[in-house]
Image (tube, rainbow, N blue to C red):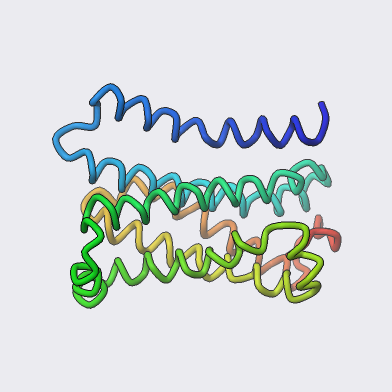
Length: 201
């Protein structure tokens, strides 16, 4: 299978949750509060795909299989697509593009501040994901993309806070996040037997 076909296949697989959401919308199967369902669904898949994208580098370090890194960019961009849908749902459907309501939310609902902060941290990573930006930024590209390790816990806390009573469903992803961050710290200090210098950080 060619590189391009492999990447396209990965993108199509990662978009399957979106296709399922569209099917539920068309089927009018979102329950009594469809806006909340869409917001929670897109937010959850943003977290899941952020974890997936960040897991690809450790998998490359452990296995040496370079194909993991070949689709890391696609996974990150699809994650940002879900995150953008989540933000769009908030702006268009929850507050109806009312900027005064946005200001009120940012001052009275701290989890909105966390969500906005996480999205703004991920935005430059999505924008600079092209080969052209990698060349233009050089070593600064790697330093910039380390922001993902700050964005991840912020985004996760936003989701946990937003779900409140239903936050227990995020427990498996909390464990996943902790393992990823611990692995990153261990790799940083050279404590892992499978550390690979070739993996971009």
